[in-house]
Every structure is written in C-alpha cells, then in structure tokens.
Image (tube, rainbow, N blue to C red):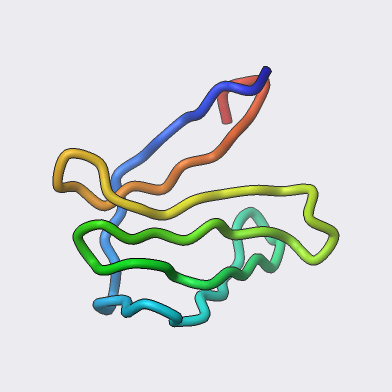
Length: 73
C-alpha cells in the first residue's frame, strides 16, 4: 500500500468546477479536471498512461500537492 506525501503549494489562479488542469511534474505531463470550489475542490492529475497519480486540493485551509508512493519522494 502506498503512502501519501504532501507539500504546501501556491495556486496562481482560482480554479472553478470543470476547469481542465495541465502541467509537468518531474518532466512528465499530467492533466485532470477540477471538481468543486476553491475551498473544497481538487484535482487528480494523471499521466497519459495513467501510471502516475498526483492530487492538488485543500487540507486545513492550505493548498497542498499530494503524491502516492511506496517511498518518500
């Protein structure tokens, strides 16, 4: 079972429900669809082959980036 590691981040915009989110993480292009609002929403970011999964969301009022991994990133 993978552990979940989190780190605080700053969003450069206010996401809205249905926004398509795209970016690059460690050289891998990822994308996903934002669901919910800025205070309660989030997005799961997957690579084209669906092997890498990252999340952006909110925890205790902070914006966080999360990754599932068997080992610390």
